[in-house]
Image 1: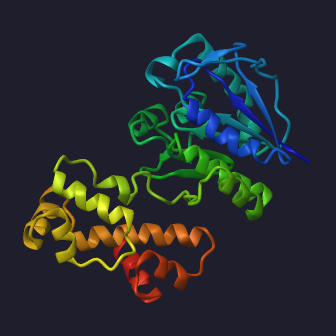
Image 2: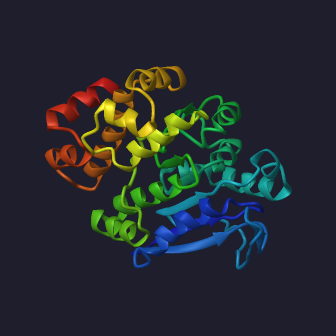
Length: 305
């Protein structure tokens, strides 16, 4: 029996919040039936493209449905429209079905704000895009908002950081509902080789320490990110950046607040975690990521826990 997936469509819907998860579910079409619903028959997306064929909001949804709320390009404005208000009232009517677990609610990016306005987030562990976290906390003071998470699940309510993390969440749901083989086939078809888990940070080591403008550090980061498993020495890294080892050490501490060694270790740890998610054993994952042994990988995990 197929699972019905209902995408709620608002003007200004973020295209990737919609199409990323939708493509993932569509690639598992033998398991899912997709529907696009909303108060208007067509909407303009964040890219200016118009999507039609949208059917009216149904009075109720079949048990076992996934209800997906994508984000919008400007949630400060587009969640205060008559269309958003119509959806808010509709969500409020569905609240008992969500609380009973008859319907699973899936919020992508700022879609969690709309769910919060409908009263669906009280007492719920949830997350959203890092730029929207403060507004989610204000919209749902009773919610348990988790910072820096890819996605969170609490009693059938799923929330994600949005954009590409919507794909991560869709793959996770496919894995849960259809099994690992189907999820892996979809990931391969989408060329999404490394599925992130809900516990992964929104700002991975590849992005977290990039908020600076120093060219030498960027050169080093590009070098290490491209091949973290290589047998790097501090001297070799510094030579590639055309600075001395001592100067590079000072630059990393000054601009990033972290040592070169610790930065490289975080890249390797993130790569090892990705390998483990793919099903590799601990020894193979450690070797692939550049650790000398599973023990070294374990110690690296301990240092960041």
